[in-house]
Length: 444
Image 1 (cartoon, rainbow, N blue to C red):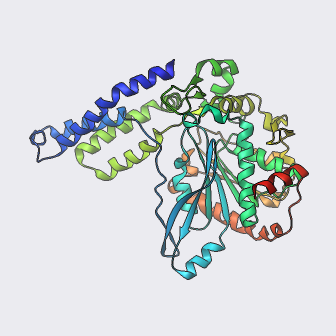
Image 2: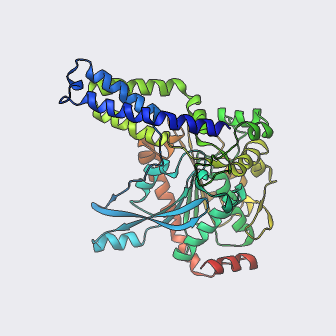
């Protein structure tokens, strides 16, 4: 019922938001009668802020048109490589007529970026993608809003997430021989599970795994996010945050954790910071500071765009990752696409180098939570493991912004390059179980 009430309120406020936008433009235009008012700039700023507080935020675009490679602007074209019910494997294909640059692009490492399915869209990693495109062939998991997925497509479980990641890895391996995987925040856990299961079956695993700011062991340095999950029972989450999608969407009737509730939680973590940010935006509009106002718009266009998560996936993540700590306890069993129950054993990973990245000031995944992956992957030689703590960086700073570009990315780039030479081993046929071989052959 709450979801229906929210949608009714949103529909009711939509014309008022449109009015506020139009009024803001009228008062900011000096050629109109409204724009002649001495207070017109303040009135325009007030209406503009009102519009942005009331408007509906749709999924943003990646908007990556070109990237500079060795002094040459290379054109970027997005393409959907695989289209699954709950996710698209999106490729950022690069084009240039510079033969020398093109030859270099062809030899660059292949990277699968696994984006979080935790409220925001994959476009939150726009800066991650933009930076990596200079030196890598880049693919990303672009998760769909559960409210647009019809009920006929079935439910989406944490096990399905793990199986999706395995399928995407195999797809890239079939095309390029092997790949590198970068996971940011929430997906560090299912990515580790996916690679562990592949290793246990004897499949070829990615050359490297880079894990950034994720809750591998959520018991370490618990944050407000961790405390909420442990202080509330599983039943509390099921009874208080799960609702059915209204009839106005393709996924009508699907049980979800609605995006608007997630957004409320995001804002509630730092309400003073957001209030100050909006007030500063109002003052910058009055001053005519276009650079600051545009930066504010870009940030909140992304921050306010949220998606619904399928209820089964969300609740299982709460239970497995934040309440039972099943990964670190060694008790996590995943149902494969064939219906087999398989135990997640990170200690079986041997041929995949491992890099973990944490932000010193991360208030989402606390200190030590990501680094814990090294204690689980005992089969990976110590010489193939590295950990990076980024001084002064919060959660977003390790994958977006100046610290990402200047501190984190150079080390990620070097780590991938150091281990990309192992790609020659992929030329030999990969050892697989009978069921895995059958599955890969059917998808070739």
